[in-house]
Length: 162
Image 1 (cartoon, rainbow, N blue to C red):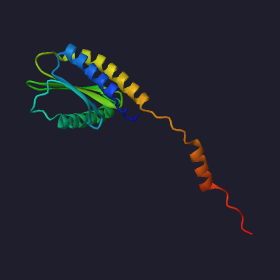
Image 2 (image 1 turned 30 degrees about the horizontal axis):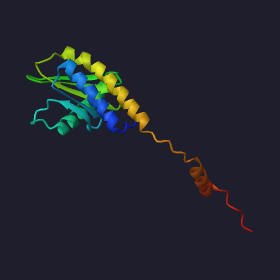
Image 3 (image 1 turned 45 degrees about the vertical axis):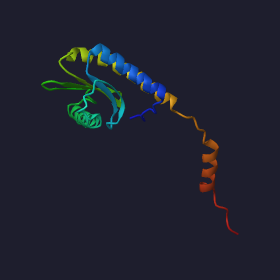
Image 4 (image 1 turned 45 degrees about the horizontal axis):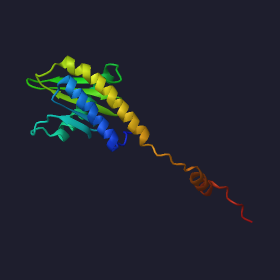
């Protein structure tokens, strides 16, 4: 698993734009981009005041982790998506490489097929944003001389005693 990217203002804006396009096309109620631990990276849409998105994202991450274990038991590395359907709401959780997930909540205003179709496009856009952010967050540091001289101090040959 790769380290999660450090999000800049620009990359956070790109994530919001990807979510905005996704929600416009899919007609889903709201969507969140969360990391595998359940931390919210971005969110957008008509989130009801009764919904605690922090708890929702933590539970979704736990559910996806359990589903990943189920996938391993049947010989799959991972299931790329998890769908849950209730009486009034549905949830679709899509994997974004090994680092994040797209959590979508939608109701009768749209269909699972439409949400799945546009989620594939959104996942590609979000992957690109996160990969770019990861590349931008790398700070090149050359510790060659400091490390080498420090190692010489620690592992030098002892001088023979006379």
